[in-house]
Amino acid sequence: MDLSPVTDALAVKSFDKIADICDTLMLQVAAEGISFQDDWPYAIHLLGYFYLDDCDSARFLWKTIPTSVKESKPEVAAAWRIGQKLWTRDYAGVYEAIRGFDWIQDAKDMVAAFSDVYTKRMFQLLLSAYSTVTIRDLALFLGMTEDDATTYVAEKGWTVDAASQMVTVKKQAIKREQKVDSSKLQRLTEYVFHLEH
Image 1 (tube, rainbow, N blue to C red):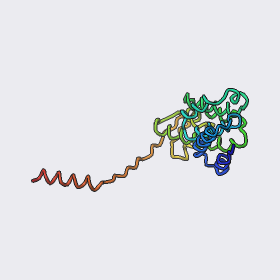
Image 2 (tube, one colour):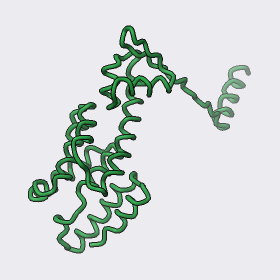
Image 3 (tube, one colour):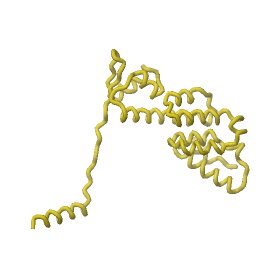
Image 4 (cartoon, rainbow, N blue to C red):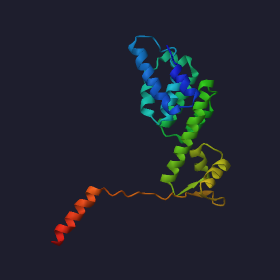
């Protein structure tokens, strides 16, 4: 079984392609009738789905993993712990699951990249859902210490009030480009012309 496309993607840090590469290879190997379950990089495959925020596919993959593999490969169980926390929206628990395991070398860079992407997703969630948030909650959402979290958001222009332990979210201005379709403009012109005459 040739897993070189997966290792190549990991080497060049194309983490957004890992899940698709694994899916394609799994279908090819299964179509050839080759037994692959014991040697398959399930942890990498699961992490590829998490990187893309595709918990549904990760959950279905988890259900297909043989019990013997789940029990004999701790990195697979550790990757699934991340999935469980994502599934239940335990935002702080995701970071605990990431930090709570000594990842194999192949997965270390991918887990670090996922952690960065996840922090950015949580920042966007805070940005869209809150006008103010406590420093404690901010730290939980971003998986950082309170000092690191306040520094992180202060760099983004948020206002930190140490006395009340609150952070005021700086909403970003929404830029909307208005594109005028010439056919719509023509119809409007004809309509106004018809009304005037």
